[in-house]
Amino acid sequence: MLCRGTARQAAKVLMVGAGGIGCELLKTLALSGFRDIHIIDLDTIEVSNLNRQFLFRQSHVGQSKAKVARDAVLKFRPNINITPYHANVKDAQFNVDFFKQFNVVLNGLDNLDARRHVNRLCLAAEVPLVESGTTGFLGQVTVHVKGKTECYECQPKPVPKSYPVCTITSTPSKFVHCIVWAKDLLFAKLFGDRNQDNDLNVHSKDDDSNSKTDVSVRNEDEGLDQYARRIYDHVFGYNIEVALANEDTWKNRKRPYPIYVKDALFDDAVQHNGCSREAKNEEQEPSAMASLGLRNPQEIWSLADNSRIFLEAFKLFFEKREKDVGSLIFDKDDQLAVEFVTAAANIRASSFGIPLHSLFEAKGVAGNIVHAVATTNAIIAGLIVIEAIKVLKNDYQNYR
Image (spheres, rainbow, N blue to C red):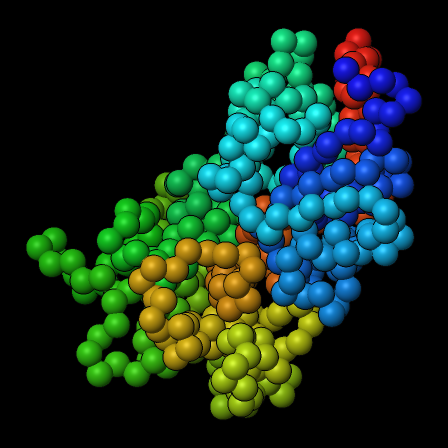
């Protein structure tokens, strides 16, 4: 066992994650006397990280989090050893033997699967693990030492919230229901694998019992504008009329109203708020907002603007991302996908009398995002270091 006076100086520490918690943790470890720190992180720096991951700057966007974090800390602690790995902790190189070289492993991860993987490696290598996490203003730190405490997976973790299919497809009452419908049904059907099981009604009103035409498929010689408007009218107009035909459903519920393009864009010749399609640099990420001159993600769009965003985003997928259509999966970091899902959810919400949301809010709902709080990350990082010191002292009776 490391003696009490030199525990931190002699310890070899592995950090997994160099994001919100990781930046604070690396700084705190360095300032607390730890001299041999290894960091694993597969991510690169994004603009959205800069408000809370204080080791990074605008000039670092696109670079490795682990490597930039190392360089930043060495500027004020130049005499310590920090080894970065721009890689996935699940890569083969990070095996049991790799983990055995460390005195303690500190987790600052943001997903359950990776946490479980690290937990199992620590158990196999018999290395103590300090686990952590933050959600908004909430945070937790726990210590897992084989034979002395329960492991990370000994207690079941909460499963992601799910919603009944009938609520999503027929009777939404919350904005999240509209988001799930737009993301998991409409987006998946139009831009993902069309052969997948999907509860979205895509059959034409002209179908009979022996013939089922999938309206999500583009007709031959059908222009993109016509195709987009046909999809709009089907999912927001015709499908609502079909739902309204079941009178029993609406006996104790507020009835929705069908929305068609001609109603939402009754004066389509004159663009609302001066919105007109703008020329875009081919190298830029396609964006319906940019095309239409809408620049504020925290603004709540009108029904007309949501309709224009929907139609424009739909067309941009086929104009700019056609090779990907048929295999796309919703990604909260895909600007065009977020725009499409936000607009679709808002149009459906309007139909059902549910308050509309901004793109910023909708992205948070769609991506299950709880916005990070820098001070929470700092507090949790401090608690991780306190627990790591207890582990190195073998003070297991006071583990959290």
